[in-house]
Image 1 (cartoon, rainbow, N blue to C red):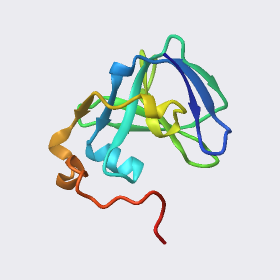
Image 2: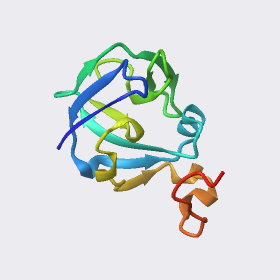
Image 3: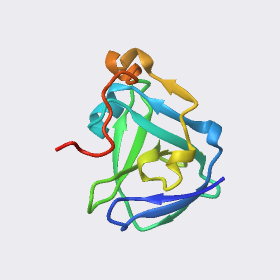
Length: 134
């Protein structure tokens, strides 16, 4: 499916071809820290067909495996956009929060579950509100 997305302020945007089966959640501690959230929801898209408009800022981190991973975000609003190999990436792991079609991309797998916060694995019993209750 064709997807579009980008940052909150609109300075950086993209289009890509995505296979909904390649959506997931990462619970690694790096994703927790970098996102300020208990996990990251993503869709993996091939570099071929990925079209970028605007210039993100890139931070490179070294993963537990030793691989260097580029973390792209908007230089103005700070929205996280994707993670990818530092050079010649074959795929981009787009952050679902920035994808317009995110409601159609339910996660199909969870990775790094050994790092998951115990409560993040079952939110069904947590009270829900349609909007901030104030």
